Image (tube, rainbow, N blue to C red; front, side, top):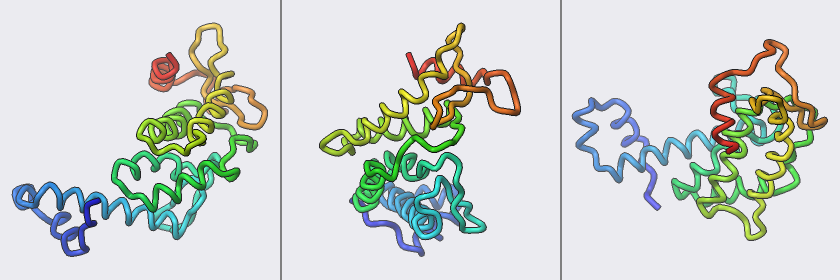
Length: 190
């Protein structure tokens, strides 16, 4: 793995003109990106683990779906960057009983598909799964829970599904499906 960039290198890259930045080697720019990821992950660990997201200014965790969304969503990036310790930390949590999809939460089908199922299947495809396929099993569990959203006359999915009841419904703010969400989901599902 590439040694993360030092604080001085990070400052140089952050403040450099495009011309000066181009003079920095690709390896050192990659190191800066890795350093930024480690910084962001460390902030999440310190202030929000295992909440869904970190509110960076207030430094508090934010619960949305109660599924450690940042942990799941970041795993494939951690794998690509070769951040092995962080990968193991995330993988252990994800494949444990801590991550379930049975809370009384209304999950947006689009967000759940691209961020959770996408994160789990990408991490599986990158070789980051457990021997027993824990990541893929979690993805399949969630996919089955979201499937009722697609049981419509048109095949256009309903926007939300309650994790606990399994009942699909439109959110309170609209009775229509978003074209961009529905189009993406139809492509993903097929």
